[in-house]
Image 1 (cartoon, rainbow, N blue to C red):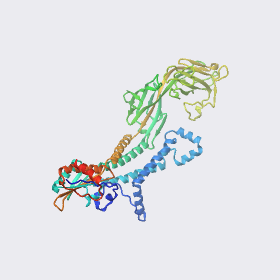
Image 2: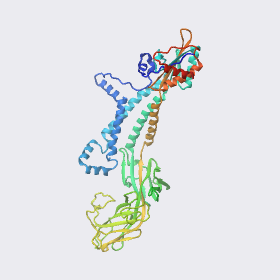
Image 3: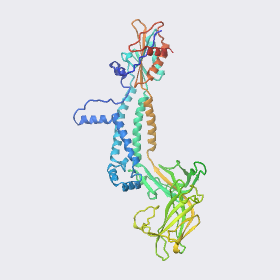
Length: 574
């Protein structure tokens, strides 16, 4: 029986670059070819050269790297579109560095000129790269695999044997075998040409197209996005209008008319916590029962908003983001007249919801002399008060709530027209209430208890404790497109990396002595062990259908080692 051999040289460069390959080794990739030729002088020549550089793979990778590096300061430096307060604090603390950051646009990275330029150049580069490659790939799909080169022995994977079968029979058997193995195959003269692995280029193109989709989706989302926060106390409501938000951020092209018309009321907030073990104090139940309606005359409906389970209305999503307590306070003047009664939201300071805030009585209060004044109280709240832990709550639930109050009187500064935080007290025009010892009056109150103000100035009562929830209303257009693009990009990249584009040729011709000589060779898109392995498998099957001439030994082709020839012959015989 004749010997079957494989030529697998360690350096495939001569095979892929040899002139004998001709069209056989061409068009295995649609990647644009780099050229070192100097462009012709003139505007058109330089424009053509610049376009080729912009649409080259190395420039696209460089722009992608620059885009990633440019996003780093956007994550480390406070941004005006995210938190104006942090930006102002940074400028006050670092005036010189703040001026430098302003000139470089580092306080608004994603809308800066330099970041937008990188973004647009990457977008153009990808389009300029994809369009010609797609057109070329479509042409390859419409065509046929090229015929075999003259010297198949020059290819990285090669095997041959002599058989008594007719060349036509061998070629027909090879054609049927290759088609069964999902090769695109056809007869080309005295050989069968086949190709497989087109999904590699499909994955490559899909990856680049997905990147374009992601760039468009991210840009669209930044231009038309909106995000607002609203703190709502149990029993209160919210209407989706710009004036109702505590803070509001939006994209450049977003308009108020795009707000979805809806409203909701917080009926009840439910929160339960782990009582024992290493996770003591961790939230177990965290949900808000709300009633909502869509439009001006929409029917009231009820739903439950949980963490990571938002309420969706139109294009808007309402998330539950935070929770705290709002002590219900009643303030009376010296004559017992109620001048203030409301639930006052306090901001949590730690995981056990130790909270602080202020109470401002701006209208209706008169002192013992009948003079109009304003009152302010610093409030410090402990949901679970424990003796010996007066500065912090020991558990987030309302097991033993205590409210610590310290009062002030005078001018709160709210009539000056200067905006001020509802959680801070401007003490520049305020005086402290003093106790009998001349110290600032400060008392701990439990629900139902009252603190008497000195000299008949009135009283403040801690009636009960309500709860509040913070809701974030967001609108992120094109987010589904961005997610789809990300998924397609992952699968496309995986396909371009793990699928091998390869070609196989089978030549069967009559030798000088009238015996049919069968040659099989394979060529891959890149160096891969899959091509010789696959060729050996195909050769083994074809050898069974066209067995070698018994008792005859073939001379080894040039460049084939004994070990390679023996191993492939064994694979073919098996």
